Length: 114
Length: 111
Image (cartoon, rainbow over the protein chains, first blue to last red):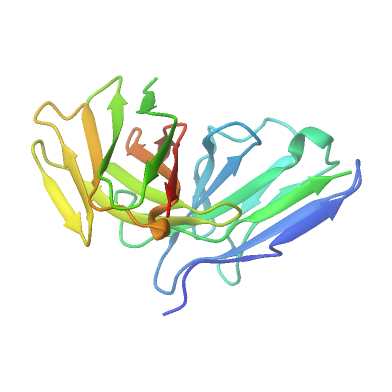
């Protein structure tokens, strides 16, 4: 059973470009979470999604960031017009039956903004 | 809002020594998770504790949740270089599955 998959593992963008990060949850999992780990900071919650629904986006910056988890295909975290401060490791996690189930993390996408 | 404080922030031990990492919450814990992260990689799930007084072990790692459910400890017995990494405690915040994390404890094990 494959774990949580994220791609790309590393992404380099210039200021003003768009970044798209993909996350495929573990098989059978329908809950997806995105977290961000900034240099020298802890891991911070961004958004929680179920299929076709955003459940909690309290950690998402108000502008330029969006997330989706369509009926078919991976969850996408999209960052428009990236700035240097967006450089971070972005982790996706998934859980099974309920929001209280254990979250299993992917390897992360390391975004570097030049 | 709930906060998790981990101590120590970093730890260097000689191989074979025991060590303990603590995680203290500002509010009652309703689910406490321990993860391990190696530099540049994702988080590996270690254990989850829910009940006051609960204790779980896996290989040489034991995690406990105190009776009041506000503090957890992670104990490693006879540490090995493979135990090196960043240990993170996480707690459920609210009822949406959102996890908040401590700042992490970096462990180095000297051969």
